[in-house]
Image 1 (spheres, rainbow, N blue to C red):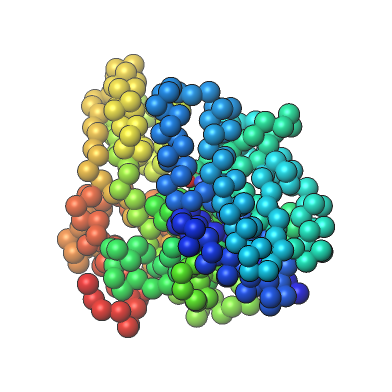
Image 2 (tube, rainbow, N blue to C red; image 1 turned 30 degrees about the vertical axis):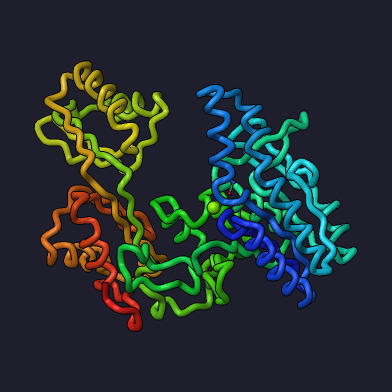
Length: 413
Ligand code: ASP
Ligand code: MG
């Protein structure tokens, strides 16, 4: 008998009919003899609706009250799902996050799970019941309701799986797995059977919005096998797990996927002194304003003068540019330059570690399309380039073909 945690997202529980369909799916797994814990999101659109209600009263409502409000969405779903399961003759019990002691810190709106007491859940499972838990929420030491940030039900599911030592955590969603890249850009993108936690983190941190990043980090840390699958059609989905040590390294695909992101902007400061403390002065001031910095590149200085280029989220560009102007004056820099017509593109794969010449293959594919590379950074399992935004789709397609990721069956689009 296995213990499985299943998570159903907002579209999967978006109407009474869909909740009934989820109940049938859960009932089927239950009949097969698995012990089942189900975490659910709010019905699709509900969390947004609740947020709008709050904003109609106060543009910046108290965070504690915001959590009391938005956590109600999930409470509706757990009750309805249990009712539907009951109708099918499956005994089920619903619990809010606080009721099953999902203990979090008190950072309202972005709380982190500290501990889960699995006793109550285990007692229900031993009694043959399905346990349905509200995603996205917990409570702090003082019993205040907290929420885990948008998309947080994924993290609830993984945390439950870790606490209960589940055999697998299945994330049911509206796509049938993780793809080599966004199928809307490359119609020949393929579903991956497997991907590692590290690869998934790289994909998720750049645009692949299938899973909340934190849930992937959590799953990696506690080694919870995660499976992304469709709640609308049958299929194996994509298994996200640790790297398979036994697998033949040479057989492995060099690149597992291509991730991209259009939400960034690039800032450059030229003619700064080539001295200790200068990078800190430039980037420290940006970080101090709570602006997240992503790619950072400094050139090899010449004539005691250096250039630093970095990227920030597009929404932060004007604030970052303002700060950088000030810094440029203080440092006597030559000039600054801001550009929001860029896109970031990465090839990701643990297979890169055992294959040489991956970067050359990537740059060759881009060169053939006459695409200029503005910045390059690398890590052990990733090569990232920044290019002009208008070439993004062309670049993704060229790399998808260049690294043999195109599906043989699908039509070319
Ligand atoms: N309902 C929450 C949201 O919309 C949490 C989730 O769905 O994972 O962000
Ligand atoms: Mg989600």
